[in-house]
Image (spheres, rainbow, N blue to C red):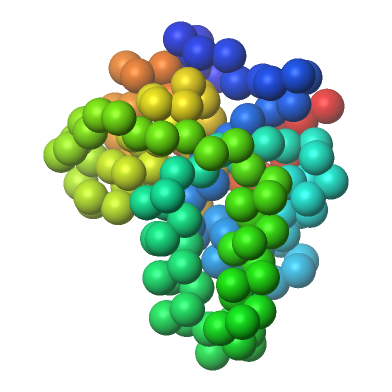
Length: 149
């Protein structure tokens, strides 16, 4: 595990940044680790940290793929509204771009740095190379679940 510059807990609750692919996977299938992660967010066992740009990214991906998810736009809006309720909102006052190969991954890293969160949960670990220097690590939903008490 990466030695963090930040604390990843607030009031005893682990804070995470959730990559868009994890949200999509959790809504697509109720049988995987991504869905379990969503359940932990709703139950208050995990704290999601979110920014406005990340929320817009969630919205874009979910609405573009709503047929795969078998959700209507109003249902996606409800999901996003609920994510906002269960999240700590963080403003990002500085940009590190370009640092990662994909600009949309940069916004996830920037949020982690601004929010002082040391865990990004993603299915695409290869997209988050060299982030350890910021005291941040990328892990899969399965790894996160294995680490939780």
